[in-house]
Length: 260
Image (tube, rainbow, N blue to C red; front, side):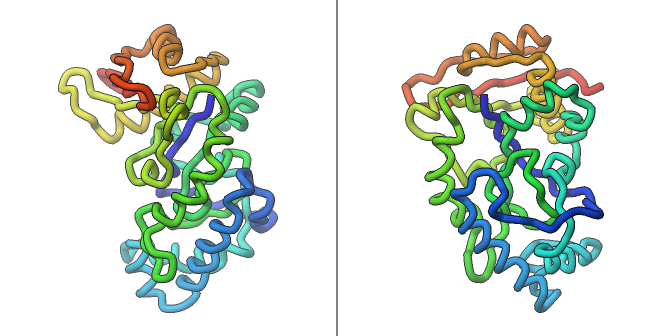
């Protein structure tokens, strides 16, 4: 199983740590594309601060993120699973998983990123600010920048099993499963059961809980149909139907009343 996650906007300060080594990150086929984004982001943020804030869509209160980006090459790096914070990652609780579940997380989780393309939770990265929606002056829209290199590396990364796609729409545009990979991909929408509406907090927190549940239960669904069964056995209320034609992803609705 491969689980595709969005990053978080907020990120922990890694403090001490060895600096970034791009060549050490997973999916080495993305190294050149990562270097291109990193080089332009650092140059942008080392120059005109106001221009950098505008390009990155940062508020006055986030002005300090510009200087952080300017120092990315020398900043301390920590495992991505320690850098990403926020509702989904709080619910996932990587740090509190048992040893076996942590090993599965290292193998099965892939976090998409405007700067790195995609990283494993064990990949050491510095804290940064650069969403997939950013348009850098030289490279243009980051989602477009990543499509070609992602198309090269992701089919192999997806392996032969289930792909559980929990990315938000902005990050999903960087790589869309196609062909037989799409046929074994499942996307998840979380609905507030009484209203059947998507609510951001319910959505993020439930997705984090789903991943944690699968990891701790050592669940190994091989395809979307087996995922539906596994989630129901774990206590989730799931509505799903097989797609009408081959090569289309399954769409799962998970219904929740409240988040504890």
